[in-house]
Image (cartoon, rainbow, N blue to C red; front, side):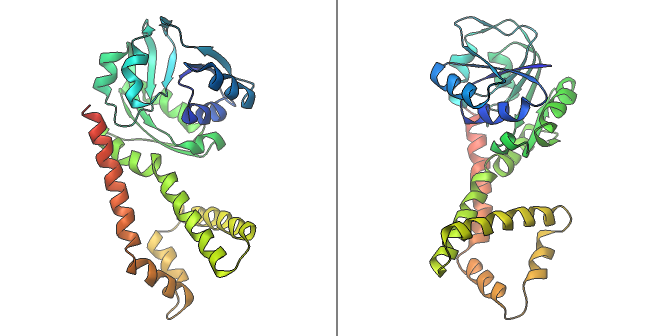
Length: 254
């Protein structure tokens, strides 16, 4: 099956890198230098500069441009796609229908872990596009169908923005170890193992159970955990998710 990715940014590259193992991938973009750089990293893809009249008839299109570029790029697309899979945050199905012709419309929210086939992708849209969307995005990680666009916007804050939030936590933990006197390369390796191990535990246990299993009375974990609560880390994470969700809703209104 051939997939046409429209866009030449980081997410398009991440998706192409993961999808090329199972699909024929064509990447169409406006920046020839970025396209060539992408092909150097992923030789198996084919690249093409977006034409003024780009025919997408019967293609399975993964739309990977920035939300603000929807109108300018869609104005150059002609014909009717078979299925349009959009990764644009906050861009509604109704907006997509007004801008691009397709038999079926689906909104998705993968993340950059697609490049290592470990994306957490949420999907919603026309029921006719459900099977193909789940097949495509399950090939690059885990994919979940949600029932409404509002649920997708909430999920965007978690699965889409979440890698950035967790990266901040990972960096901070490593910095803490360096501050305490550990060498940077050792700190980094420890954090990598920490996240991999915790991820495996989360598949089988509730976060609270994991926390309680580590926290001994009056111990080191309890002391550190107390500082996290003192500095409102839990509240900050909750607010970060809500703020990202609010931004997705704001984008939907434009």
